[in-house]
Image 1 (tube, helix red, strand yellow):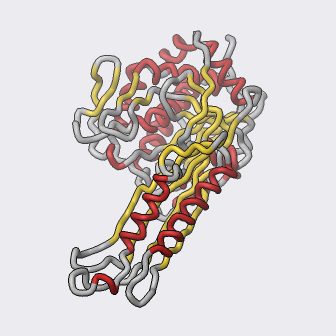
Image 2: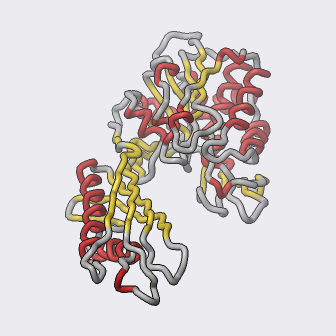
Image 3: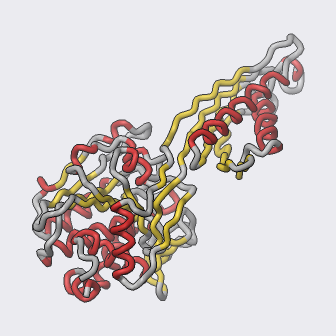
Length: 399
């Protein structure tokens, strides 16, 4: 019944047109303004006033700034019930700039061989837009609803980290759309720390007086080798504890004839276990401090290192009996599928929304091979996600 009603209000063809149009809009983190304008324009044409939308200033707290903050739409309920929230992030990663979405069989892919598609997370963004359009066009009964389109998810969840929770209307159940299979319910995600490591060596002429210098590159290399050799880089498993770490960015040096005196490094540490995650961070810092002590110049001078760590987001794990998980599971079953509860080693907007006091389950919406040029959108999973979202928005599970 839901499929028939939904197609009458927002057809599969219109939904594909909307998601394709949005995937073609450039909108990496910090540049989501055009995507939000697209959403507002379509919902205003469906009868909403611009005053129905609200924005926060999350982008003003971001290290990269940005065009807009998180955008929320609140709809008063036509039936009694706890407020429900549907969310998705509007930014994409840089590899998706220049995407030319086209349908190829049962998938949408980018016709530009050098770009990703942008299904992460324009597919989730489109699920929310199509759901809101269906409600407005069909005047379907629904409890109080909040739609939240976030920014800068791909920048360490920076947007939702600074979310103005007060503009959401105190939702009791929350459903985030971001991922692959529509029947996969992500009920928990890892937490992450981001590290900035500043290594200072001593400059000297690399040919005339190499022993008078201390290479910051050498210090960094020794530290990283120590982490790798002792199992603290990459997949990290120590007894019953597990996590990951990665040195992702190294920048330093300007000439081969100079002993490099400065290197900047960015790294991360992840684990579902907060205590073990902090230990990974400590091990990274200690490896660099030990490396500093192993190198000295002819005058006995050593380099220096400064390690600054910051939590990007905390881990969470929802119970299968959490109301939002139970509602999502029931909606999936109502569509004739069995829900799969899962954990992820990546971060989600749900990490911070849950930390803000709103337990949030994440549902997939057809994304495949995200963050690379092979990215695709599974059309059947995207359409299934739309039907599940409508059930969740209307509390229409068993009808």
